[in-house]
Amino acid sequence: MSEIIIVSDALELRAVEEQHVPPLHQLVLKNKVWLQQSLNWPQFVTSVEDTRKNVQGNMMLHQRGYAKMFLIFEQEEVAGVISFNQIEPLNRAAYIGYWLDEDHQG
Image (cartoon, rainbow, N blue to C red; front, side):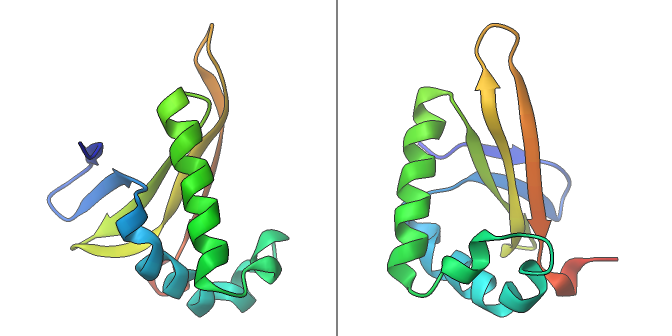
């Protein structure tokens, strides 16, 4: 069952799933130059299979509670990613990382 966090009428967070691979991959490609200004990993995304492997790894970490990766949806369109990384099980602390499609910023 999908994990969805409703933020507002137009905005929600959806736990990443296999079905999200194609739109997420397209969003990464669209924002690759911009993302590479501050992140190292976009340069290594060259195929949809790269995105699929990342999603599958994050789904496993999500299920085990070690990390939680959500896609940010605005009006049913993928607009970015937010993730809670290196979750400490005892105190539930985590590092938060996110990025938004350049067109959705501001």
